[in-house]
Image (spheres, rainbow, N blue to C red):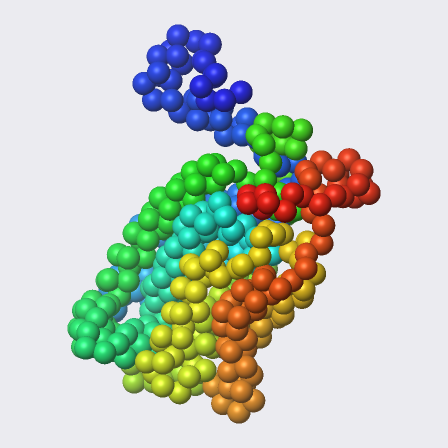
Length: 419
């Protein structure tokens, strides 16, 4: 049933729906035709929504007790942990929730890379998703500064100093970020304000992301366009909602394991030491989810070159739909590219590990090798392999391999521009 066909039964419901069609929208979401072959990798969209809502709710509660002042911030965090009712639980949910948020978003991104969900006609969905990812990184970095421990202070000092490498305006940007001539109380106030604001910007982009998704519809594991509704689709509710809820339950068990049994394992012990501008930590590192880009930053001896390379590693994802020249979406039917995809996964994991190591010796060499391959994958491998690769035969519809066990797979029309 579409939103145009839905009519509330009660007079109050009809009166309200005629003026604000929220009931029609809810009906559309539950009856939304969804490819019936979606696997559990597609459940991370709902998991990410859960993570965002959790971060916003716990963040609002924490803001009620946090004091954004350089002399009081560290003590206010300890006050939350020790004196506020269930403050320790709320803080651990929020801090570990950031890690779970990034874990889910990385799985979501790599799923899109494997199944070609960034390709036409879903380019706008992909671009909005990358913008969400950029805002997540900004919010996470600023949130890491708020406890005002040693790693918070020195992490803020190192990262904000990077902007000073920008010609002409770098020093002015850095001074504006600091609000002074070094990282101090004005910096903390700025970061607290922005950390509070950005999640609501992310929420707005998430609404756009879902809206954009409902225009072309979901991609699917075989990457073939479907007609809605058809024998290839099922209503979103109850079929997909049950699968999403089960995946969310499994995710929450893992999440709870970190919160209750290893709440600090993903953090850094130096952040339990109050910030001291006179004592530099032995090794300054960001949170684990930013380590690959931190490794790319340190792979170049030139400060400006490192900054350009680090931001290029992120922004190259925005033009990814136009770098991939293959007419086949899913890597299931791309035997050569599939191998390169797994090399990219290993490369990103390697860069993450190298980002936590000192920038010297074999670590620096491996970081540079990993950085080179990262860019080669997007700038060389994607366009060349997409052009030269001979793909496997595609099924005509997703029902063919489902109903026949893959026995009657036939070639799709070569002139089908939608694939």
